[in-house]
Image 1 (cartoon, rainbow, N blue to C red):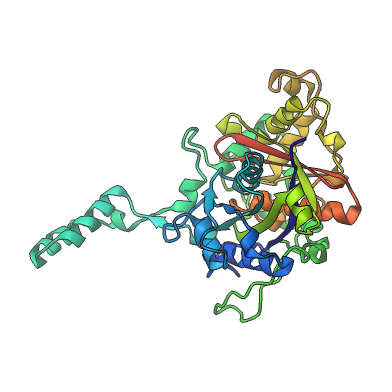
Image 2: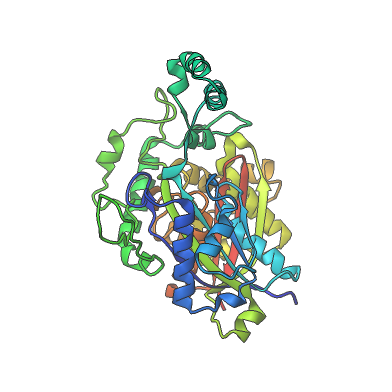
Length: 430
């Protein structure tokens, strides 16, 4: 029997809204903090690590191959290689599944994996005309040439484009992620009130789980003018959140007819997650007690305009690859990343739709939606935030810790992926 990948331990930084508590820290800062805490709290000898694999979507120019920068700054030996992976919102999961693939191929037994994102520090970009003028200005030899080039600048040259908005817009469909959510809520006829109610429940669950979530969070000292105190908690969940407050928010992506607002969408966030994983045999030899095991995984493509339906196709593939296993009904916990409240609600409706199963998934029976009592029990990205490169790893960490608390056995983790993909993982405890 092939070895299983054991997930030994994991820690994360707090998740903080863009421009707030962690805005002063870069993506490599956040990743280094998470890896350093993982090594310190587990007491792992860095010499036994075979490779570091980290996900990041907006990979910063100042830290090329971000995983390598994180590894060296966290004190890993220079001989330990590192690679950065990018699968949009599933980058944190990609790091984990790549570790499994390397283990099965005999290319390592102990890995540090995870994801990081500083959405606060995604840069502004000058247009091509302005960039060309800046280049010519830098190369000009004489003062006269510099004056001539400088006089050619126009006001439009000093209106940079937000890299964040470009990154959140699909290059094929032309829709940004919020617009794809509007497509789903129209097609599945999901009213604004239902989306807001889902968002409110996400906040309530996250607030109620504050002490539980602290078990996976490491305090971060982010020296800034705001505070000299460590950041200990996610700052997205709002204790005072109410249906009335959510109802007052205006649609963001379709201002005339839309229903997706800042309140029922995931928050733009900074944060990082680090996981220690190893082959089952190596974990046993090192005396490491696993939190759980990665049993199966699936990635699949779908319509970029309806990227939010990715979880359905990924779960269907997971079951097709393993007949009779790994359905929502078999799980003790289910985590569906809350890219948008309306997107998750569309997924839940489609899970129970015989027509969707037959026409889109090409199967005889619906997937079957999980009971809400086991879905995102500690809140989701609408409340906690969605640092895109790290979210997949956060879902795994949160699910396994909650399984342990409940003495549960199985968890299904799934998310949609910008660009039209879906990812699903099956986790198990002994």
